[in-house]
Image 1 (cartoon, one colour):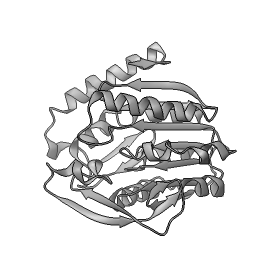
Image 2 (cartoon, helix red, strand yellow; image 1 turned 60 degrees about the horizontal axis):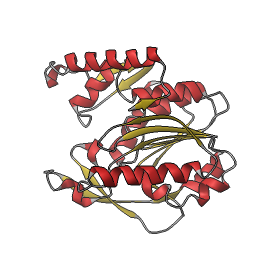
Image 3 (cartoon, helix red, strand yellow; image 1 turned 180 degrees about the horizontal axis):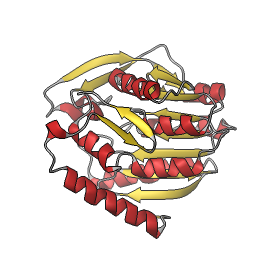
Image 4 (cartoon, rainbow, N blue to C red; image 1 turned 45 degrees about the vertical axis):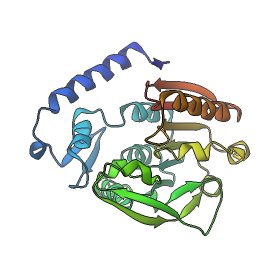
Length: 266
């Protein structure tokens, strides 16, 4: 279910899906490594799965998020993008605003991919950090499980019972409250594979923030054992917690499995 979307945007979304379906017939070895999307040069490596590269090729990669970000991002905005992956969204933000932005990922491979995109596009106004956002500062590190399929990496070991290669690493906790205050963050973009539930369980940091005006979050199933009812209940609680901080839900794409793209503003 999608709401608050113009008809022409729905048509563009459908066209991208059709193009993606066609590109899935292209053999993996013929899918380009270097592509351009939204005026950004994107140089990828073998770490990026062919299916992800197909999404970039079709213009379907982070399509909803990038459309919203382009609409809300202004020259004075500061973007914190956590779960930055290949660096696409932070690249859009850094192009629009000359302010200093933050790109964060728990996976060191994704941090390197983001740095590569920033170099390729001569964007020097982004600080890249390896870590996991937390509601508080702590010297204790998180244990993070890096999968050979980097987009499936997570803090939850049980997600990988069917994966052949998983490497546990230690990554630092990064205080979201401290970073928002230090940088004057106005827009939060979060794609953190279930970590959003921890961040928005205790929202005292968000209530206290005087700068954050927009939140763009992809909501995931919390674990591989989740059922539909649990996923919907958790998603509803997350929405209510953010609304209680004075935000409005401006956009939502709700899928039955519980994965959702949500945009809040205040």
